[in-house]
Amino acid sequence: MKKLLIALLFAPLASWASEEGYRLDRAPIDPTDVVSLQAGARTFVNYCMGCHGAEYMRYNRLTDLGLTEQQIRDNLMFTGEKVGETMKVAMTAKQGKAWFGAAPPDLSVIARARGADWLYTYLRTFYRDPKTASGWNNLVFPNVGMPHVLWTLQGEKALKEVKTEEGGHEKVEYELTELSKGSQNTVQYDTTVRDLVNFLVYMGEPAATSRVRIGIVALFVLLILFVLSYALKKEYWKDVK
Image 1 (cartoon, rainbow, N blue to C red):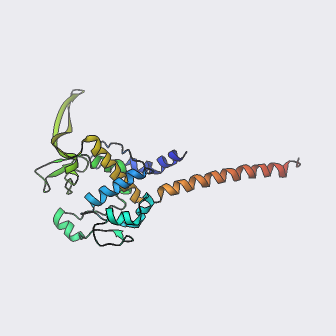
Image 2: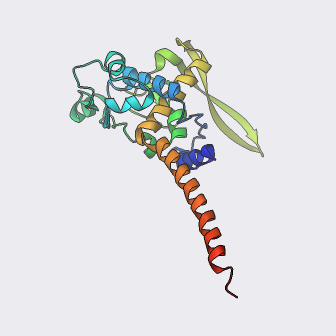
């Protein structure tokens, strides 16, 4: 019952498609996996927070993931912020626009805006493109201004065009081929991205899991009250013909 309610809660996130219609892979996230969320938080602060902030998320909220405030200070905070402050970055919107052509968006609710499947596929489909300013492009988000910040983990990919015949018509598809290896193999990198997306979904609504638990308890209490009310009704009207 609990898993069903969690699935229904996050079902809208799976319904988003990319602007170009690229087929999205299902994000194998689990909002109750605390270890995954902790790993995702580590990846976020190490690779994303150089440009992207999360101004609606406070560091001390990470205690909900089983971390102490001291662990947050030692492992997830690299500047002089206090643990009660929001996860903001020093780069201004003006600087971001000058460097990347557009200010990097705040990622507090990016999972609610884009969807977990979109993010999971997007972070795994970067490829080298010498025609872009950053030298990178993306299958889900063509001509994206963001470089591939996780390329040292995944390695470098190239885009290969594959032409096939289908129903007498030529069909063009694209696939990614390896240019250079990263520090992680495919399974390890997919796990890293899974954890990161899991954390981004968590940031969009940190209370979602506890809200589901409260909802389950509330439904159980209402069920008991219904049974008692029905029994009381039968007892009250038993002598009425």
